[in-house]
Length: 77
Image 1 (cartoon, rainbow, N blue to C red):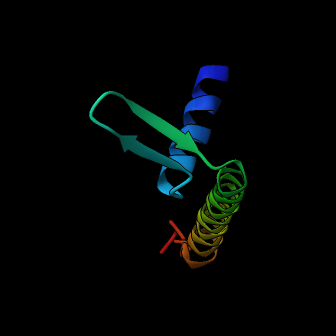
Image 2: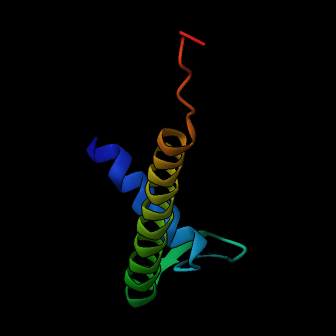
């Protein structure tokens, strides 16, 4: 579980541009800007929360509309 959370944080930092690749003739390195990483992780987490919240709200609307729109059939007719 922890590896998954760390992977998500790294992915959000990569997407946000917090990690940069720098290479020279002799070596290469990954440079992490901590402030940008924190900002991109926060922004990504907020976006994921908003998407999840919207999906749950849509699912609840669908359940309610199915309950209301279901017609009742009288078997005696």
